[in-house]
Image 1: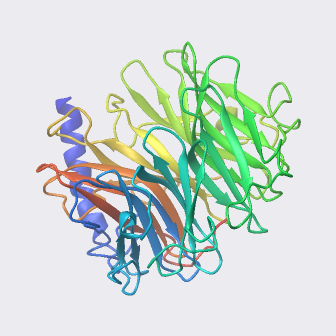
Image 2: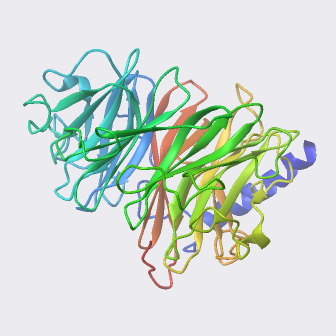
Length: 444
């Protein structure tokens, strides 16, 4: 452990010097304060950020839970609170300020933007179920086109994720509390069930060898729906489900041609978990998560062919497992989010252990890596293809950075989540790292 502390200190010093430079993988000095923010959304504590999205007008929405009540903040492209947004126009909102907002709500699980900048959100309910709501483009209130004027409607299951289709329909992935399956539903743009999807508007799917918990989803270019997560059985198995655009298990995916894939990916000690998944331009599926080891866990990055078969062109057909900067894997490091550049390079964001430990056994930095198309680390980015640091401006007192979302924009990568400091206070955090400064790539 002492050798790790020394190596971590050396790397940290290098990163501080590196971050001040205009170079790929360093903080963007034109965003927030030196590339970082720490956002007090409400006077409540904690303010836990869980979702970051970019709006069509270029601004960003960071959302989550403030003392278990859904809340949000709007940011300009430079990382400042966006004036004119929210119920008071200050760039933040507590959903309980909306007239008629139900009292039995929990935090926000997911959000997505319509082309006109209105934002649809999935909010948990205390007990079971969810609320599906639509915010006006400026976040000043709820859009009355939903719920017969109320601005929200009830859903029977705990909604975890939502995505917008090309024709402005809404796909919602739910986790029924106490059940072994997941439910995938489709709604129109005002949250009326689309009964042409699946069976009466939804599809229930699961695995025979355990309970599936969804952790991420994506929509493929042809409209197919892909959900990634973990099946909890004798050991955790990384699980992928794919449905057709019509809500039927895809017979062209999975080892049994039934739309299902699950595997420990060779980690027989304690299995693997999946957290995020995307499709590349060749219809391959790139996914990330964590692989458990005898001491903790490592980052996991892998790619499979369209039908779920091994992709021999990525890391020789094997999952890529590594621990950011350290040879130790005792800190339960994990890759949370993945995105793709148009040149097929793979951008991954996650967490790594923070040394020395302050206050608990689970202190994290945020971390990033960029991989080439073949799975090797991209030496032109960060330090050897890797970068890490503090998400917020509170580096001296921060104990934990929890990354939950990633957004790629030309010239930069934004990561969002929350930071806790040693006083116990928790606030939203959004950080921007520089990417491709010599020329701007677009992204898949």
